[in-house]
Amino acid sequence: MAKQKGIFGLTNTPESQVVDLEHFLAEDELLIPEVGSAEWKKNIAKPEWLKVRTRTTTSYGAVNSTLKKQTLHTVCQEARCPNISECWSCGTATFMILGSICTRGCAYCAVTKGRPWPLEDQEAERVAQAAVDLNIKYVVITSVTRDDLSDGGASRFAEVIRAVKASSPQTKVEVLIPDFGGSLEALNIVLAAEPKVLNHNVETVPRLYPRLRSRGDYRRCLNIIQHAKEYAQQHGEAQMMTKSGLMVGLGESHREVLQVMDDLRSVGTDILTIGQYLRPSLKNVPVMRYRTPEEFAFYRQEGLKRGFKYVESAPLARSSYHARSHSESV
Image (tube, rainbow, N blue to C red; front, top):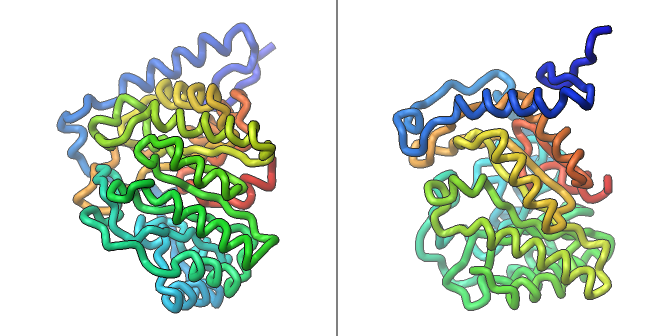
């Protein structure tokens, strides 16, 4: 009797899965370029499955108009998200607070780096009003990193969460936060405002941190998620979920991605997002490899095996893409 085949032809029988998976992971590692090698400077053509047709609708126009009226920033624009047409046409957006200039300079990021302006007045009220105007029932709030602020901007996050809840009591709020320099006191300020989801991305595998985000700290990222989960349990907020994500195609191996999954589950991460890195400009690090839809299906399968409550794994998946579905499906 022939063995039943799964993703990539891996056999589904228990006795052969381990051997097949090990062979699959080893083959993938042979294709990983050495950091800093000539392979890191190559430009490779974008495959068909990543070519997105833009579209504008009445809802897209309404989102754009409201953002301009309230003089707000979105990560959709600043990070040049490939899903902007889809999300705005559905009447959703991810608001970016604390200005549009970041104090760090990650090699993959399109957001402007430099010395930020002082915090804007009434930002919380303007975000809350935009949520009302757009009739958004699930709001995602993110920010640039502000190492120049004493609390990294945590107080402003809390203000925005509370303002949105006050204006739209039925609206759920997800926050995608920076690391606040590792300050748990700052993190507690955000957690005390009771977001529905606390998201903090690891972004990539630890081996690539020195090259891609030299001022980041992988262990710090894990500590943030672990503390958030423990805080929620200790303060009767057990329904608050934790979330993290990473990009692939930056020179990581499948084995390293699986290890990140294990690390995230070990600190209680509920939701995982995995998407393809897309080079936003020639100033940013090039794409090392375009992972196939089948590889993303493999990641989703492995993530669910490890106990994540929801895994969004697809070439165009981003942290806030389908965010409402993530929280409502678990």
